[in-house]
Length: 87
Image 1 (spheres, one colour):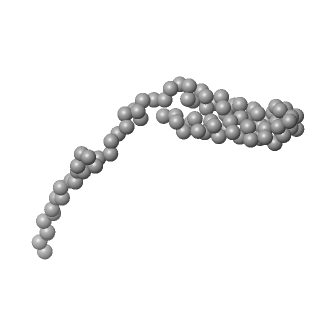
Image 2 (image 1 turned 120 degrees about the horizontal axis):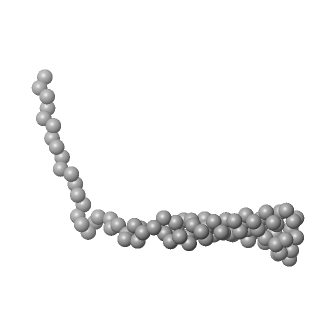
Image 3 (image 1 turned 180 degrees about the horizontal axis):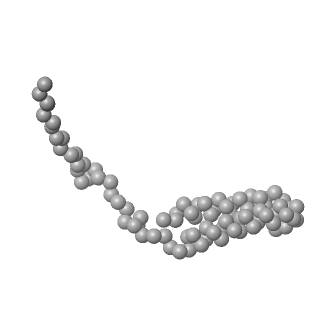
């Protein structure tokens, strides 16, 4: 049985106005303060929570009560937001 002829298709290239543009800012690395700030926020957030639990709520601020938990977790969430900007 004869073999059929293989046809080569042309490769499609999109017009220039439809091609995605590469952002110029993504090629630069992030400044050194970004990971440093993230690590500081992580340490402060965990330190705040550990201090609150070990002192049975007396420290860091007695009058804030359970808001101390919110402050500790806010530090951890803030560090995640900073780390999301790290390239």
